[in-house]
Image (cartoon, rainbow, N blue to C red; front, side, top):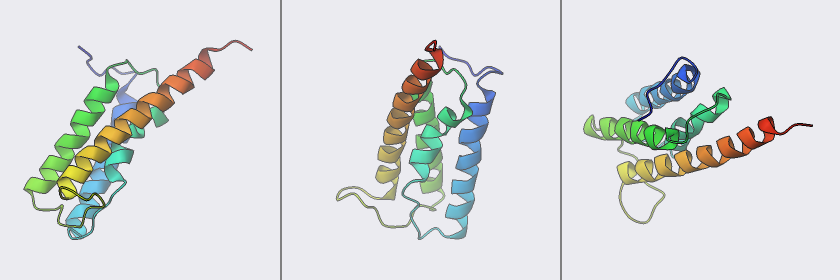
Length: 118
């Protein structure tokens, strides 16, 4: 099981920082849907350029989905969804899944590029 370490603290700070921005924006304008927010929150750890364990996409997905669920429980996800089914919560969970997947692919490519000897 992965436990965040000092090395990966920057990646969690980035993700949590974007989650705070999303939460504040949703609190100010709950009738607006921030469609890319869950994608950014879930993919943000890649920007830290830390070496992340292979299990981190699962944790960032779970974190982002928990933030979305919290926003929904506080009735802050009132905006429309771009998806033909489900509401803003469903769209946020799908966005979290997409962000974690995108982040995993980018992290794998970045590590492969950094590890290569010239």
